[in-house]
Length: 244
Image (tube, rainbow, N blue to C red):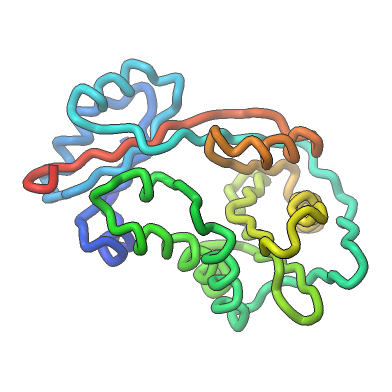
């Protein structure tokens, strides 16, 4: 059972939080017992959708579904650099770009219903800030992201992609954003292609990305680029003590 306290979620929401990556061989009562021993108020558990018995255990002890994630993968990266429309250019982010990337993430993730948003006990403004903070930290902290790709137009930042080394030559595309005023110009597809190009230049042989099951638009792009479904996970929240 992979479970630990999340200081970042405590800072964000004022709630003692544990995060768990559970597998079919784990038991939900064991996760609950661990949480109670640490005075945890909220458990965030990610579970393979195939682990039906574990899912039922979580539901029986009061956990509730907050999202369903689909992962897509491509086993061989396309090494070609992505072409951009006239007036657009690529560059890599530096720590100095953190605030601008955070502002763009805040704009592009407006209305995004992640698992924090699905929990009515959590402050929705704090949930909105999760993605902006994540994007900013991706520029500042190499432990959060190994590279952040940027697209600029007339000197302004209009798109970004954060990339993370997951080991065994696997690159993950984590956060992507395109300014609403520049959508419809295939810039998201260009980000996906440029991520593969960057990966192929840095000894990666495969790439994975994930999204919520309802986000069909990006899944269509992934299919066109040769990505295939590879795995799926549920996210559950469970509250303990007076917060339950």
